[in-house]
Length: 408
Image (cartoon, rainbow, N blue to C red; front, side):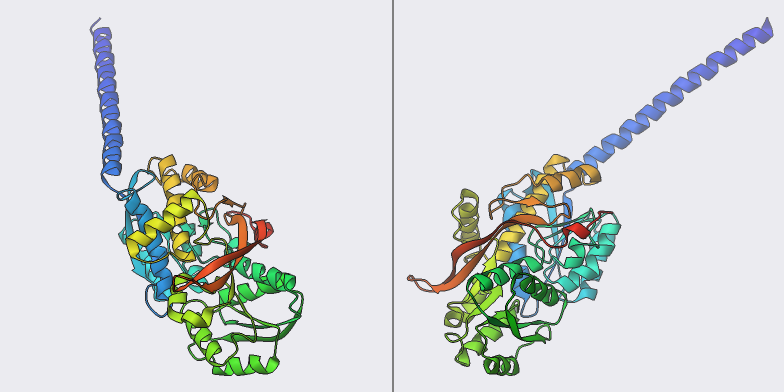
């Protein structure tokens, strides 16, 4: 009887101990969950922006940054109703500096979302490693062919275009205009090669010259002399940022502006026009956006940007703004919890936001399927210069590399 009683007491004590342990475990789990909720609620989502703010191309990064910041300001420091903290770093158009910034934002700042890169060479140095670490990269500009095709990744999204696209528009337009021979000039780096490939994909006339300059080149006397001698029907040029400013001024001084038409992808943004002025009049350029789009979303964006910064937004500012709105739509879907990666990714793929360019959706490789246009630089009656929308060239246009993409 004593042994039975002892066993009974031992059993009762064991049962009580189990109940106590279970209660402690439940309390511990609740404490962890509560702590996570409080921590999440108290800390903003960190977004690291790696962009080009110095060099003569620095204004491109400024435009992207300012467009993004405008969206955050309009929501009082939030995106999609979720508090965010924007961390900004200048890559100086240098791939190594871009890598260093990415490492700092991820390891020190614990950012789970990166954005901002302007140049493709910086993107290729940063993006592949970043996305393999479980970090999302949402590009507001650079869209190299590798990241659209065989090097695509499920955590990479591009809100602007695949690099070839804008030059494909110019190639198609050149064919429609009946240009029999065209001279090509572009910088010798990844985006330069992609742009030329895009132009050639649609332009089937004769190429009378194909010249690749150094990235950041300032003097184009030799190139202009060579193209003058070639006497083409038109000149295709891709020279972003300060390169384009110098080229256009020198082209005008050579007396060629009214003799040989200039065609370029996004070649004459509003900031560039203020620097170049009369020398840019008549230049044909391609874009997926124009300041004079008559939609409520775009009119509100242009008005707010001009009131905030005292200038008309560029194509690059519109891309920064759309990037912020896309991120906001996904943050809202997961309540700001980016660790819910599959849900966050699905929300990005859905692209549930109103783009200032109009219709917007992602293809299977997370690059946009969208309409493209050509614009022409005109002198405004009120003074100054602007891009005037000429015509739509492509409807629902998709990049050429999507078939090579298998997300990892």
